[in-house]
Image (cartoon, rainbow, N blue to C red; front, side):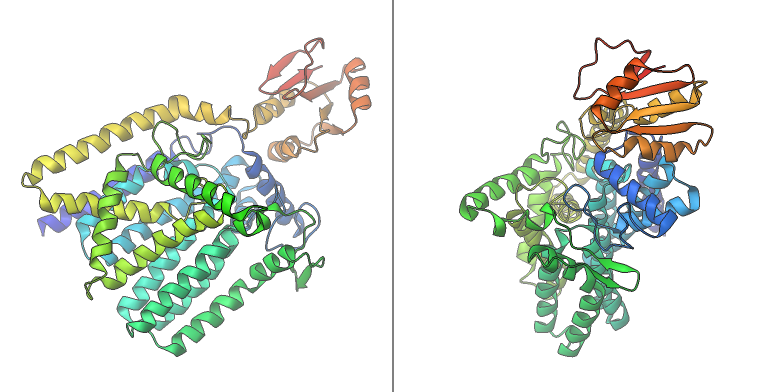
Length: 505
């Protein structure tokens, strides 16, 4: 009984660590906003106000964005904005909440597939301090909804199979289908994963053909809009489809649907590049983008790779054992199809391969425990492993909050100074604010919504001649904001510079 209580204490400590490290300084751990995040915010705010995204499409199943964006985060963000208003807290809350929920689901899944609370706790420990999981939880990138919904679906599927609960099986199919709305890459991973798993379950007589038919119907009904969206855009069927208020949109330019090896001019050469990039992401655990993973620490800490390999070998061996085969086969399908996805998607990065991180952590936990079972000095082994990860995590946490977030903010993919600029001009005793918006950048317009300030008049400048004129003719009751990220205004007499913006008044 004491052991059970101790394990419960450890569970809650790990959950608490995970929540605290993600919620600390939320939502301003990264004070700037990513360009993809901005597009989602813009459309979520528009849907919250009008029921249509920013270009007037009613409840789309996919966004055009910067070549293509998924909508699970969009609609969760819309709900959050409806409740809390258009604030940074509201737009980042959905990703934080789903990341916290995923810790509980992850523990539940590992506990069931391993039938071992110790392995489940090790897995939870790896997840609670995982750099990838921490970073994706503190800001809103649409594609990062997919791995969480995939995790939930797999947990429901496995629970349904081992407990022979058909209702849970059918619910899992709906969640698998919903996960397709979380990332475009899911359209390749999820159907193949389900076909492999369901056929295997049929082979070992865990489900019947009737169950597979019902599963297929549920999946296809829920996934129909997003599958249709990809079909009409890939085939160039220039016609959007409306189902009530829901729109299956056709976009003239949607690069994400064609960012696959099948559409490459030289598929063989592209395959070689994809193999290299996929192996780099898995074993080097960075893709050159600091906002996806730290170059210093990697996505899961590089020391974990050793244990991942051990865990993978263990599961390959276990598929021969009938009692362990279901869990091992699901895990091997999970990691195998994730790797295959990396080969299909051109130039895999941390995000494009985000179906793989949860299963790698599971394998890492198995690897750590497998070594524990084989070493003679078990107590010393536990002390060493625990101490190593505590030290690495402590260093990462300090680095993350002191230096890393600044590196991310200066990366070029996060806005620099938009929010602070608006706060500054709002503090000025000026009635009219002109702002340079010639790049059609929605950032400033979004921040105006954030500030919810009706005491000033904001006027967008979209013409170079108009900007040059205004720079020479600023009235006493006016202020001018200019984006200088790609232009030089050193000869212009301005009052203040914040990030990439100068303010003249």
